[in-house]
Each structure stands twice: as structure tokens, then as C-alpha cells.
Length: 160
Image (cartoon, rainbow, N blue to C red; front, top):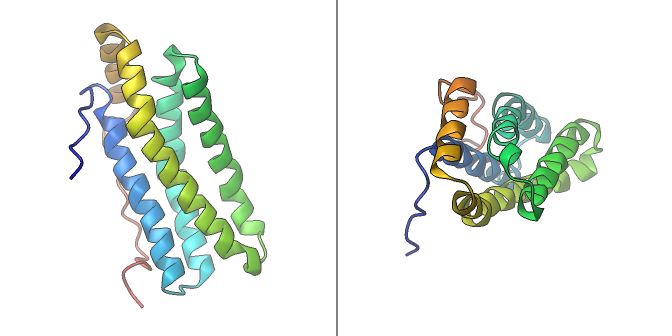
């Protein structure tokens, strides 16, 4: 069994939000596996993107990523852009491509979260001073005083 990753308390809110992103990917896959109408899944994707992912990306980009400019941060920023590009394309995708695009999005988000948790965050925690991390923690609290949640009403992933 893998031991839990020790995370700085100051960036812990970002890790908690990652939990919802992993569930997001799982829910997409469950919907696809159960043959749920693709538009229902796309509606959820749009909701989650607007209320969670965009907020989370902004938090990371304006705090944690703003103080370190290296290839690892550039990779994360590039992956944020890939998600931002893929989500609006879902609405325009022909039905024959929509399921493939949804699976691609689920993989992209899951792999991105795993990268940040396993590689990028430990890297940044090693590079940033305790003072820098404390400032970032304060900024995160100011940006998002209440934790993000995922309370979407159409639970397509659990029914059918």
C-alpha cells in the first residue's frame, strides 16, 4: 500500500480540490461505461469546469505557479490550457467523437492531478521557502474562503 503524500499545510487546499478532480474523471468514465446519454455527461463537464476546474486552475496559476518558473510548472500550465481547449470542443463534437473526447478529458485531468500531486507539488515544496509557502496559503484562503464542492444534481454516474 502506498503511503500518503505529506503535503505542506499551506497548499493542502489545492490537494483537497484535486480529490474532486479525480472523482470528476471517474464520473465521466462511469457515465461512458453505463451508456449514459452523452449530453448529460457534457452538461456535468461544463458545470464542473465552470465551478471547479477554472477556479482551481486560477488559484494554482496566480499563487503557486506564479513564484516558480521552470519546466515542471510550464508542463502544468500547458496541461491547464489543454483542458481549457478540450472542454468547449465537447459541445461542438459530433456524437461519434464525443465519447472519445470525454474519455480523453477524463484521462487528461486524472494524469494532470497525479502529476501535480506526485511530482510538481513535492518539487515546489522543495524549492519554495516556508515564508513563500505561508504567503501562498494566505493567498489561497483569500481567493477561496470556502472549500470547493461538487454537488451536481444529475448523478448519472450512480444510476441506470
